[in-house]
Image (cartoon, rainbow, N blue to C red; front, top):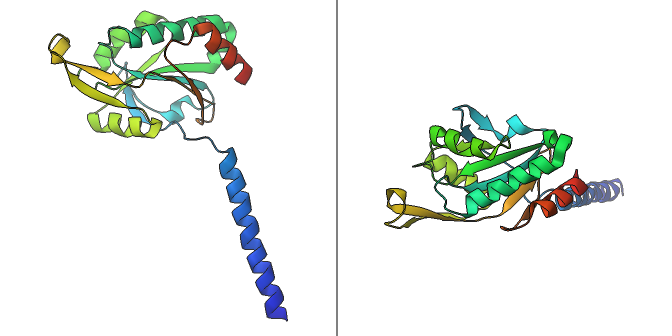
Length: 188
């Protein structure tokens, strides 16, 4: 009888632990911000360097003719509209074009938006790993009229991560700064 009671307690404990783990998974973010890249000042940065701040993350490339500069202009408008709350948010621009987007190239590109955007780049392998972590698509597309004979096709959403680095949501390309600010303030 004691063995039967012990077996019931052990099975019950295992079931309870499994249930708690499943409940925790249901509340967990879809994925975490996870990267180790070099910023536009030549400093290696990881997601941990931005812990405690909301992250606005956009993947693109400096030679982009429209989507990237338009989105970064919206990010700048968001940061401006946040006023004093902007200190709680860090915008990141992660290059998907490590061949052309060196730290020096990003140092010319991201400051033009005047929003304290941190430009990040790395080796082709680092960019590939980072894009897989964030679940973004990109590809090199041969195009003779583009600089160096190619352009980049890529996902164009703006990601939001909470101060613990957990994915919160994303806005599609073309979402207005006003809508982003409203949504962001409601979450903060």
